[in-house]
Length: 82
Image (cartoon, rainbow, N blue to C red):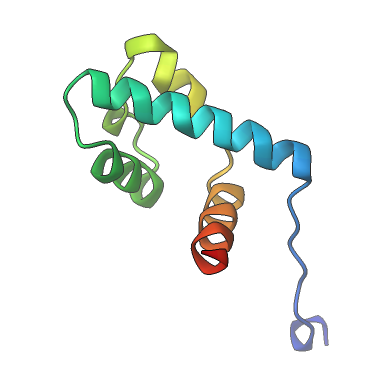
């Protein structure tokens, strides 16, 4: 039965760099507009509702280029490597 095996999930290094660049741009746009960037990004990740992200500097368009699963994987990896 297939459910007995653990699936392996891996994000290519180039994608990690792209995610970081996008996330930093979104963070910067939210901060410049006076929002709490961490709260807004977490709200977006949990709900996938793009209205958590400002349109300023195309931040909303940028964040929608990221796959939530890949983003969460990278955030957990970075947190645990600290």
